[in-house]
Image (cartoon, rainbow, N blue to C red; front, side):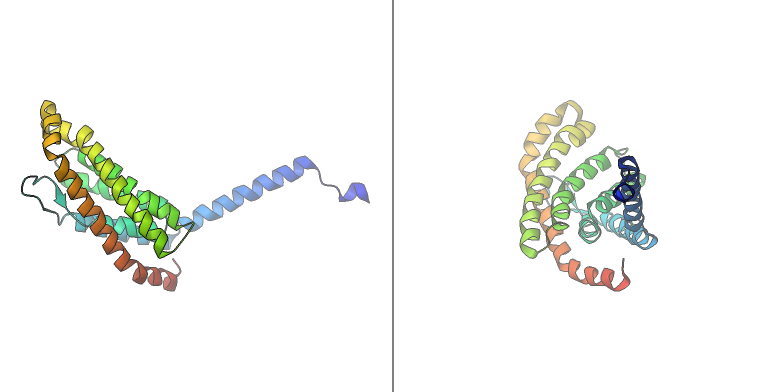
Length: 208
């Protein structure tokens, strides 16, 4: 009786491995269900369309143009998860190449800046929800996003457009870049918080 009740370790290991694989497949299938993919596609379109409505805020640096397309990327990161947010960001910036004059270099810089901005708050939020958590993670994200924007402008955008004069122009524009990106990231954070609750209720209603 005792021998019959014992399980073969090898058989148990295989069974456990198959269970883990099956669980992972179900998780990924649920993550990228038809409803969620359609929702992501809508947010890509919204983010892209809104990003075209850009405008400068500092006369001294007209190349720094503010738009609110990243509101939808941050929203999708909170609503569905950081992976979905990064995917929406990549697709949106890929679409931007079609209307860009930078040959994709500017879009690469935007992609790096945006992803660095959305990751911390969206990852932490999915483990620990609450307005306090959102507030401090978004505050830190604004600083991270601004720091990465400085790096991207210094080593990607400025060398592309200004060549050997890039260090000089970067030095002259430093505080404008800092101010611009702080204004942009804080504005996006505030707009996202204002829209989040309504969209969260929508997702629950349609079981997305």
